[in-house]
Length: 321
Image (cartoon, rainbow, N blue to C red; front, side):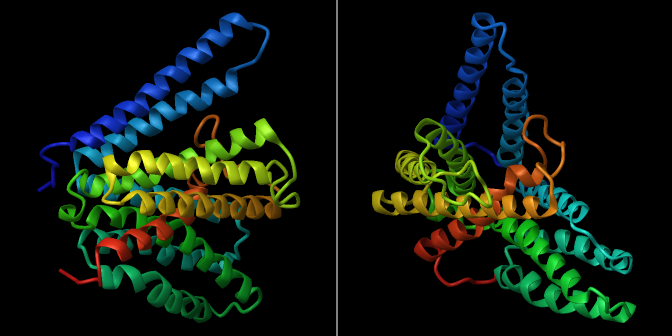
């Protein structure tokens, strides 16, 4: 039977209403700009905004209607992210028989989330899958390029499956410890701040410019954008925390800062991967945004960092139910 959420926390509904309000405002502004400056091309901005309508609506429906559906949705996002990653990374013909086991780890990893089994959730991929996949490669008998193949597959699983599953496990944390918004509030807090940080760093970087922070990796990133994003995201966390989390003021500011820093690291890490592979976007899956990897790159780093931060503060030692 589906675990339907009987009522949506009013604070979560209020925050989501605010998000939709921002989308409405952005849509009105873009349409107004088209009329005022018809000579300008706003097609890319329009695509991005329309995609955000779809992304936010699907995400909101998943997290509000059903816990199982939300976990399955995040598992599907992990599958798409891993699929994109493997489509970009050169693989050996012999490794194609190993990829089945890599994909199989996704439903298993998210099942541990669904089953509230923290012990297996936290070791399944970094211990059991990491030990099994190289062995499966060796039984095939192809040793040329073995180290590169094992390393790239392990790295992909860590980023696209293990890291993102931490976002899903927020839904398995006891709701009683966050009476204002429950486990849904924690997930919403993480996702909103991670995406907000991406926008804030871009806007501060464009507005102020200045010294490049990593010119060889991501030429558009500046110190002004990075620091402005961290401060702005910490401020946004301070404002959102009372509605979505049990964090006090100091904890909220810290959470915002670590989400911003971790998100930045995830962003530039994937920029380095794409630059190494000679591609601009992971795919064209999301109009105006590139691929799934382009949309969740920051989240792959911010999810485990925020999860363990909130877990340490409020949920104590892990206990299997």
